[in-house]
Image (cartoon, rainbow, N blue to C red; front, top):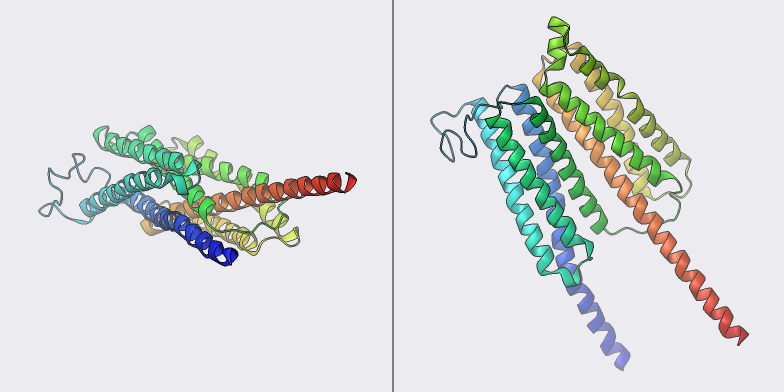
Length: 324
């Protein structure tokens, strides 16, 4: 009788512990999507020459909503700041919720949420400096680099909180995917440097900064090799988790699309704004796909290792009992 009383109580306790975790996971994924949209808007702001459409910061023409000065360029810069503010408030709420419910959450989650808040605050500071320093290229590049780092941090948190059943077949995939993620991140920084210095325009018109542009172009080779290796090894790995196999296929597809978009952007001399924005959006999506793949692979490897260690300990204890 006691068994039937204890089991429902345990189920209720487990459900209560899962509720904060589920709410936080959903919030983190929404923040990640909003950050991806924010980076796309930021790219549109740059290619439309709207980075200084609002001459002051954090307000725009001294107002929360500059209705009198509103046009396409002002709207892009204003909406970019609005989206960033919403993400910032969401990050504050995430930190508060994580620390308030820390007893029923993984120990690392409050600290990871705090780190994400630090990144978004630093990102806001860089955003202000971008305006006050008149789009200085190093600040603009750091602005995007921090946004990508914040985006990947959210993806790591969200993926770590997502239910996943290990299969124990990842082998060397965690290392390959981690290397590919790092290479794509630095390639994205090179792309941001090309954009912030208008290297493509200057190379075509006055043969200046061509070294920056060609570094980005030839820098595509290492991440391409790493991603193709990831896809190949995933195809060759038997009994790989279906989620990992799909993510590997997505990474390969996004890589092909990104190369096509990059080539078209180069041939059209950045004259098609939508093409340039899509190029950066697909690059961020590719990085995100690789990060999610890496986290799931690491979880698979760790879960399998812990289960193997538990089984070995259980077998040794049984053997010792039989011996005695």
